[in-house]
Length: 410
Ligand SMILES: Cc1cc2nc3c(=O)[nH]c(=O)nc-3n(C[C@H](O)[C@H](O)[C@H](O)COP(=O)(O)OP(=O)(O)OC[C@H]3O[C@@H](n4cnc5c(N)ncnc54)[C@H](O)[C@@H]3O)c2cc1C
Image 1: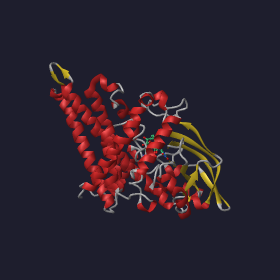
Image 2: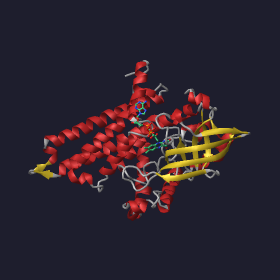
Image 3: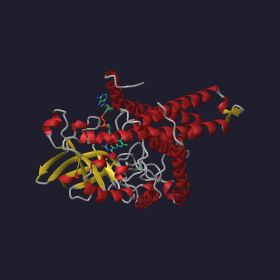
Image 4: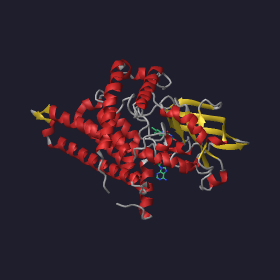
């Protein structure tokens, strides 16, 4: 597999980094008082403050004007259609340059690959609805979320209980969704519901995807769920109480919702892996610098073999994850099947980042435990990433299944 990254892709990523340096970083500097204080970033109920939401909107729309916000979306949705190698390269460079906990950069300058922006699942949107909704999403004025998981169904998506009942030309959706990224702020939601209970109970489909305007009566975000020591965030709970949507808002065939979902989730897994590789490179650079400057026993700590081993282990991890990631992305661009490969990359890259953040903190001693260097935020981020978009256990299950069916080319 040839997975060289073209000069064109590198130039696009360089342009994006210049855009962030010139447009986004000055906004962060101007509003440093907000971004250095969790109590000012979030409201008491965990929602982003209005000021931060407005800044995030500004960054999205400026990124859209500059062509970056939609460049990774499919061409048929009005995106740049740059492909998988470009997507992982761009996301890796962003993460590597700016590191974790940048509320105006991560998933703002370039949206999450499937829960927001020109998500692949929107390819199934009715033509008239595409004309109505895509311009707002592409401009960054409107955002969306992807509502599959529920209090009693995460890994086992087929077990969801939210149901959509047919009523004339409409569907009426009732249920609860949980852990839904961006749900507290989204204008639209892609909601998955059981439309054929018998098929769903027999694990033969029966789940359908719908495009829902979050202003529809009966749609309510009841709580924000702060995760891993955060004062707030973007993960929320949605209550759907007889939410009525026309049949034309269906995404794909009735009963095929989980196939539609996987088209998005696979893009998300690769994007998450790319961010993890970028953050690991960022942490390795920090640890290497510190090893050269911090002195103990009369010499830089980088001269102690124990510290060298931490750095070497991080470098091996990053090299392995990056090679896997680019190889897998090239497979996708070549039109080859990659289900097992994506699962390997997602699992390896997220676990790799946990190891690297842990080592980077260790190299920094007590300084690593303060959040002044954002290593502590990176450690929390890494821990979280082993669960969404399919847990590490579920990825291993996919890898083993593909392996045993002879569908992995290693
Ligand atoms: C930060 C974050 C953002 C998220 N964003 C979204 C979103 O935008 N939209 C959305 O729909 N969901 C979202 N989720 C939900 C996420 O997809 C689920 O949390 C995930 O799929 C795991 O489901 P669960 O938490 O219910 O755990 P469970 O499925 O209950 O699993 C519990 C444990 O059992 C293990 N397990 C389960 N089944 C098996 C098996 N067959 N073999 C071996 N081990 C097994 C799991 O790996 C895990 O360790 C998000 C979650 C997080 C943390």
